[in-house]
Structures are given as structure tokens and as C-alpha cells.
Image (cartoon, rainbow, N blue to C red):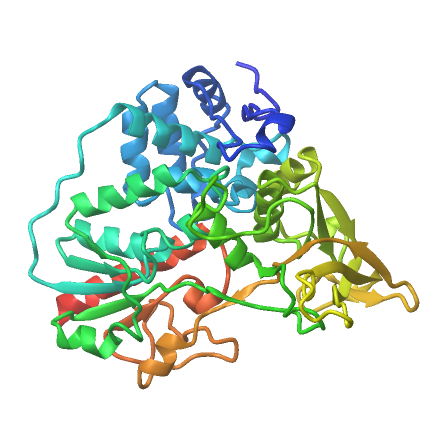
Length: 469
């Protein structure tokens, strides 16, 4: 049978339709398309795709089940190593991980591994109603701080081994960045909720509205009988540029903006939290979070949305698919530009003018690319005298996040690096016995799948630690 050179396209809503709703952009493969795509897999003996997956999903095996039309067997194969298949199939950067190693990709487009994973997970969720069965308890208790991808993965792996796991989440809904950071149109919250319910069926307790470091400390968790703690608290502290005007009304961090929309549903008619809608919006940054913020602003009714990024399209760190979707939806990319000041309205004759203190524009300077920096990206250099003003009503800063210092400041002996990330060894062990960490709390903002990999590594180490103890 001749090889199909291109992967099957992912069906999506039309750009002119999806730009005005929060329904999922990609509608998913049909069974027929999934089988056709699976048949592109060469089933290589050395399995390079598995090596490219941070949680080592048995990729050729689950694809073989799809070829045979046994979608449930494919789901069970994925579930051997991944706790969140429906999530990973949607938000993982497969193009730079498993698919980048695909042998077929040497001459043709790689197999659509992520699209097949999503199909299998969605088929299971739609057709199989039986909940997982909790294993017999082994008598040990473990606490997990944070219910994002690293915490949920660690909790799931330990629960399957019989540990009594309690997950402590600071917000009122479990899911961490999966619910507050990633928009509904990329990751429906019902999918995250179903993944959490599956963990609860395994015996995992999830306690929300618990801020570790305030409500409870890590040392108090040990006093309550937990024998090990995994910290997967993420990196929710937003970074700002330090330019004039960041204190103006209408300036948001991407974290705040997305949390208000995603978790608190500010897009509804009578939201419980306010958010600026309409007008012109500038999003500063070029990562996936910047794309999410820009596309959210558009769906909230913005008349015009700009991405302001100091490098060129080639250096843009966001996933290619997300950039293409943003362009299709009409978002304007202002590349090789860097903000130097956010401008606001000021009426000195009437200090009570309601317009005072609101954003009116963002002053930028044009850039050119010089020699590569330490990461290999060409360094942006300002072009003298090239300043200009972009008229906008709101500015969203999306230039990265850092781990919250609360846990470090309330946990004696826990070492962190210069960026606030918790220092761990290769197994996820921190400088304190019995305390492990992983995900963004260690690395700073990274991918969902890398956080899951860290949670899996730590779960294995915790199991070995408590078994030996």
C-alpha cells in the first residue's frame, strides 16, 4: 500500500465562526480518518517516537490497535503511562516531541500522533462509562500540592499503587493551569473535570481552596500523617516588563486575564468577575499563552487585537498551529517591535474625570535582529528614533511566569534557584527528605507533558522511598 505523504487535516470550525465563540476550535477525527491516519505508521522496531515522549507512551502499540479498529484497547495502552490522554492529545507540542522523531517524517509529514491520541481518548470518554476501580490500600499516605498536570499525574500513578493520596488545590476548581490558563476553545473544561473524576474513582481526595503555605504548611502535612509530599504548585507569578504605565487601568497580566475568562467565566452575560471587553487590545509576547490571551480577547468582543513581539516570526516560540489559528482569525502580528511605555489618559483640569488612569496606547520601538543569544535566538536590537504609538484600550503582558515564593518562604530548608524554582535531583527529590517537586514549580513555565513527566518521575521515586522506609 502506498504511503500517504501528508497527515490527515484536523477538522476545525471556520475562522469567521470560531472567532466569536468559545467552542472548541478543532472538532476531531472521525473513526474512518483515525484508521486512515493510523495506517500511515510504519511500526518501527526502534520506536523513536516513544523516546520523544516525556511520559513514554507506547505509541506504535496504541496506533496498531487503532488500525485494527479496537479503540478501547488503544486507550488502555495509552493509559499505562499517561494519566491525561484527552488533555495531551489537545495541548502537547507533539511537533517538537514524539512527531519530531517519527521515521516517516524524514521524507513525508510525520504521523499525527497527537490527533490520534485525542481521538482515542474522546472515543473512550463517549463510549465507556465504567469508572476505574480503586486498588487495595497499601497503608501509606502522600500529599500532593497543586492539581495541575504534574500533581494529577503524580497522584494518579501513586493511587494505582495503593497509596492514599490527597491533592490540595489553592483555587476553587481542580485542574491548575488546565482550567485557569488554557482557554475553553483549546481545552474544554468538561474534559479536565472528567480526568479529575477518574482520579477520584481511584481513591484520590481533592481538597480545593487550600493554599499551602497559608491554610496549611508542608510541615503541618507531615504532622497530619502524610509520609511524603509532592510539590506541583506551578508557576503562577506573572512577570512584568518594568516599563512606565504598567499600573494603569486596562493593563493585565496574561495570567489574570485568562483566569478571569477561563475559570471565572467573564465571557458570560452577568459574570462574577469583571473584565474589559471590546476596543483595541495589545498582547505583549509571542508564546502559547500570548496566543491564548489574544484569541480570548477577540472572542470577548475586541474590535482589533495585536500581538506585539520583539523578534521575527521565525523566533516566535508559540506552536505553529496556534499561530496559524490566530492569523486565520484576524489577529494582527506586530513583529520586531518592543514596548517602551504604556500611555494613559490624564485630565489635569478634572482629577475626577472617569477616563483618568485608563490605557490609551502603547509606545513601541522597532527592532532588528543581531547575533544569537545564549539560547541560539538572534538578539533583538532597538532601532534608534523608530518609536511609534499603537492606539489601544487594553494591554495584556505575556512574557512568562515564575514560581510563587510562598511555599519556599514557609518551608524551612527548601532550596530554590535564582529564578525561584525549587531545586531537585534527577528523581524529583528536593533538599528536604520526603519532599519532592516537579513541573513549573521547578522549571518555570514549560509544557503540560513535561510537567506530567516530572510528576511520573517523582511518583516512582516516592514509591521507592516509602517502600524502602
